[in-house]
Length: 116
Image 1 (cartoon, rainbow, N blue to C red):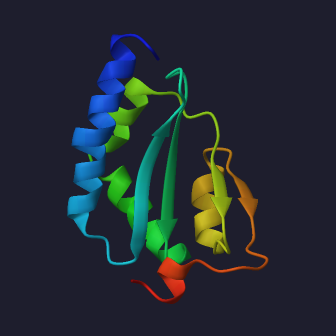
Image 2 (tube, rainbow, N blue to C red):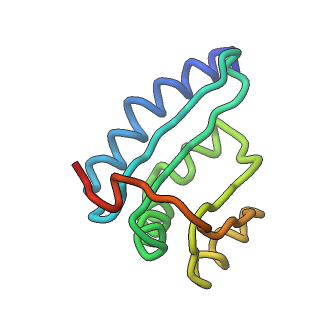
């Protein structure tokens, strides 16, 4: 991704995708963050939600947005990992992308338990 495609992706992720998702003001969305490897060959999107229902709202909004097709022009989705207690509808939706799932075992997230 170091080419023009890489630079285009960085601009798109920052100026288009992150801004678009932020402006949706999804009530139970906690974070939407893109991380890029040092060599620019890989990008990771980390999204956090209060619960499985909030993730389904985000997924529905994504499917209805222009971002759904734009992102696929810029990157290849190679892995989806869902952390937390996903409800059956979320498991079904993410399984279409070959998602792997990990149920919550222990610990906490201060942003969920007691937001600042």
